[in-house]
Image (cartoon, rainbow, N blue to C red):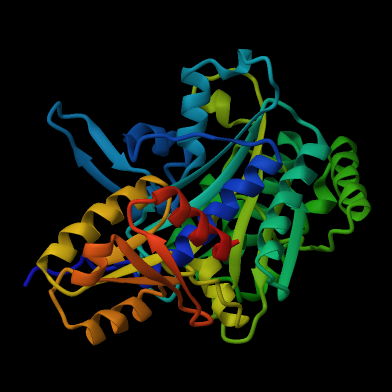
Length: 425
């Protein structure tokens, strides 16, 4: 039997309402913040991610789904959303748009060949935003504000926001030199990845999953001590404006973004809900001031974040927050013979065109079984059509919540719609 690929999941009809509810809210909040949706291809040139994510990263080296197309070009299913958005920004010359910064969001599947674990899949759905074209602490705060608004709008409370500053390029360079001096004498005690990072990207040693508990990681120099005055002033404005909005946070001096183009503000949101799991990160983001130039684009800056909808659902479950289920259909029509089945089919067709969700029995079951089916589908109203109803062209519209009935003319669609909508409102 052909089975689902390892590390993926089927989202069945009994659960898709959760995704629809979450995605609808994400769309609405993004629009409230004046972010417009962007849709980029599911696959891109492999070079985009090698350059835009980094050739030394685990994503590029170990996790990408890469293939040769029929033109012998290397293509990759996108493992993250920022590089494709930046590629589109550059290719479509969005720096010339009248509205600046360019503020966009996306909801899309991403693909990473990771070891399957709770809340981590090889295909997952990511919501992300990017604000490109302005370097301003207030934009950083707006992005963090949206992030917090999203999670709090679902009723989540066990949240911890961590922030840090990576500083500008001069600050990063000074800090990298300090990390090399700190780690190099004992680098043989670290994993093979960290041993290569010491020469290519020493900051990434700080967020290594294997060596996170090594004493030297905990004793590592703080990046804040290497920030120049401009970087400290920028970070201070971020903190002042977060305070002004009443957004609580903690400073984590080991919170970094290892890629060379990240600068200034970095942040992560964690869940400390009991039972959420060992990996507590819900979302991460930061400012990138070198990515566009790295991809042959203009000298522009950006900031963004990305979250996994799967992990958002996990957080809701850990806090016992239920997503409201669909209310059911407006009308279920029960039938007693073949002629009434044809009439019901025609009536349902007319009602659906008027926006009334309707259904009927397609298995030619007895009336009692049809009523049970109506109940399973959450029907707010039912109508039974048989020989008598066909002769008189009238039937009883039954309100399933209180058992009341009203006589209706089957051909008077307008009145029938009004009665159904009256109860629904």
